[in-house]
Length: 289
Image (tube, rainbow, N blue to C red; front, side, top):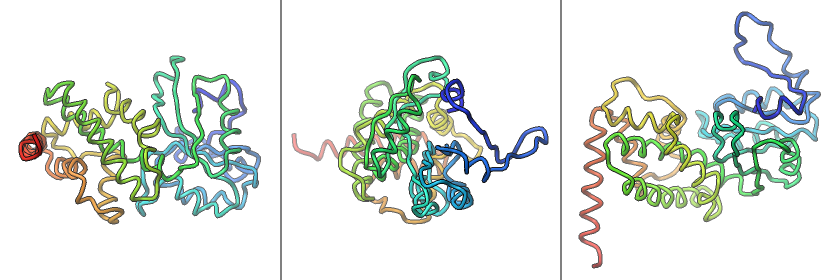
C-alpha cells in the first residue's frame, strides 16, 4: 500500500512496534486528520484499534482493510470494523490478486472493494487512480470476506499436491472442488451465491495456490514433507478458529477436513492426501456410469 500511495498522497504511517526505539506516532491525532485509515495488519488487532480510533475519526473517514483472516473471536476484518466503528465512520475491504512483489514491479493487480456504500468504493478507486491496482465494487462484504479468508486455508492443499508431484490435473481438480466448498460455506454464512468465483475467491485462490512466493503454498509443501515445526499462518489460524468457535459445520466439506487432518498430524500429511484420493476414486466408482 505504501508503494502505491506514497507518490500521490500524504501518508502517515503508524507502527505498533517501532523499530530502533523510534518515538511512536500519535495515532489518534493522525487518524483525526485522515480521509482514509488503512489497516495493513492481521485481522486480530482490528477491533481493538478501530475502537481506539473511533472517537477521533471524522464521519467521512473510510477505514480500509486488506486483512484476509479472522480474529480470535471469529470475526472477519469487516465484521470487526463494523462492530468497533458503530457507525462513526465507514469500513471497507480490498480483496483480490495483489501480490506485493508484482505491484512493486509495476505489474497489474486487481481487487474487489467491499463496502456497504458504493460511494466509499468510488472514493477508494480515486485514491488508487493511476496505480497498477484496479478496483471493482461489490456490496457483498460478507461474501468476499469469507472468500478471501477461506482461500488461504484451501491454498495449503495446492502446495501439498505440488510437493507430492501429483501434477497439473490434480491442481485442476482441487480448483474445482475447493471453489465448490467455499461457495457452499460462503452462502451458509450469509454471502451471495457465486461470489467466490470472482476476484476475492477464485482470482486470489489461483494466485495464492500457484505463486512460488506464496506462504500458504509453501506451508502445504512443508506439510507434505512431514514438517515438524508448528505450522503458522492466516489459513492455519482460520481453520483452528472455525473449529474452536464452531463458526460453521465442517462435516460436509471433505477438503476442509483433509486440511485439518494434515495440520493436526503433519508427519502423516502425505498419507492423508493419498488416502483422500483413494476415497475420491471409490466414490466415483460407486457413482453413475
